[in-house]
Length: 196
Image 1 (cartoon, rainbow, N blue to C red):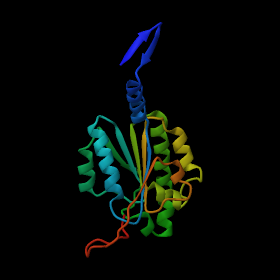
Image 2 (image 1 turned 60 degrees about the vertical axis):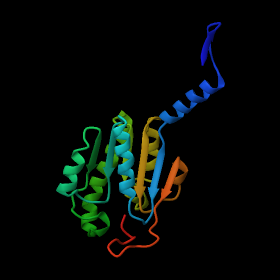
Image 3 (image 1 turned 90 degrees about the horizontal axis):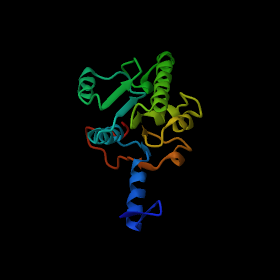
Image 4 (image 1 turned 120 degrees about the horizontal axis):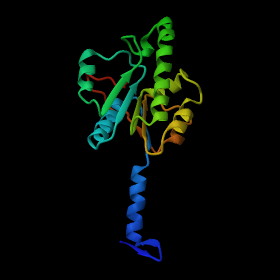
């Protein structure tokens, strides 16, 4: 309980602790989800849907995955306007499966996606930004060496940032509040551990 005395508001220790926890809860976190196991995108989507259900605006930008199927795109549109998903790549294949010429064409689209992520963070367009497979973009050096630091500097303090990918490039973990590694310990017959 807080009391006003001599023009100052004095709170009991329990109230001060509750106020501190409330401030901490509002502070955005940086989450890294990586590994060779399946489910990184699903985990990020789950966090995004949960945030949207609590009235937060979520944007997901996907990298290195090619064009969304019509069925998936239609399904994700149902989450709008609270949760929007963007892909800038034009090819129908994963980046790693493209020819060298195809990779050159997609590089410009990937950089456009990165620039859009910076714009979203600079303008405060969302409460949570999910950059799906962005760790792969960093690992393959498809954007500048300072790309992650640039995004973090542009991020408002209350915005959550989720980064996913198969590998976590050196130095990325030091910027994270939470790091999750997904591993496949025993593959089933119909799912390979190598896919993410």
